[in-house]
Length: 383
Image (tube, rainbow, N blue to C red; front, side, top):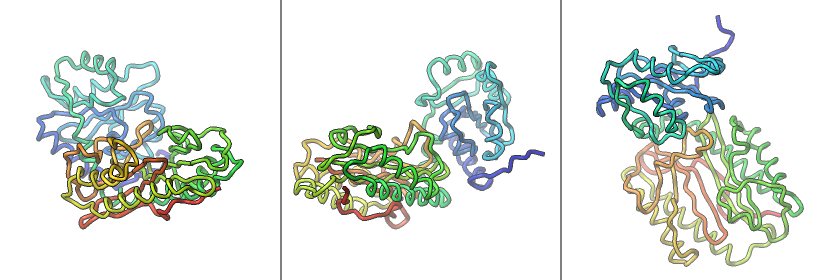
């Protein structure tokens, strides 16, 4: 008997419901199996997640029946704890994992079968795809990037509960970072306060450090710059974009400020961003076009001439994420979007211009929208 307790993050019934929905979509697309490599998709269906996806892992999903997890054998203790999948096939370092995956596919599909693969996954590089194609030359590997991705966009009540917890962690991290920001402190001092607050509030994934952005002074123009030993000075601007992660589900919050008394231009910019974002979040509901929400965010910024062009997204999907990915960017909200909002979608809503920045994590509900992060939305004080 294994000494490792099984501690699934969702019930077996929820995992099986996800599997059946996936298999229904596979039937609609005429697929005999999926061979998944993207960690988020593997985890969503199997429960299996860890920090070792640098090694080969895949999940075989047949058109009917049980999935097969192909794993590095050293990671099986994680699978024993977190995954409901019983058929796990492991390889030792130096063995041929692609052959193991091809054999698993061959065992559940006939000759001539159509096998869906995620050609846009960084975990299926060209060399690996060609290797799998040669091993499965009697089957057709076809691109199907969107089946599991699309299903993941509508969150269950349990998933939303995890993201709500993550939202509290993110807000606690931002609050701690702002309190630690003072003249003479370094960005690393701020990061230390952030990490402590994250841990104290239940943040359970430090794979990418604090997982966010802490920038001061001239470095605030760096969208994804990381914290350094730079010493904070009077009058410095500061931008924090920080996650909370709970059971690998993410929420984010962003705030900007200045050390000392803010000038009128920064106060004006922050007020315009906050008001525009408030209006957009208030308008979010099932059936509303994402492009309309984007315009509610962009138009006031452009009309106030805070910036000449605003072409970037004002929101993107959040949920189950693994580094280096920190969002479901197939679910962007921008003025080019053709998608309509649906209940259960979770977004990181963000705006930044003229030195000001603000964001919240929200979920679309049956009758509107719920903000999952908290805290004052006035320009924060620091220093």
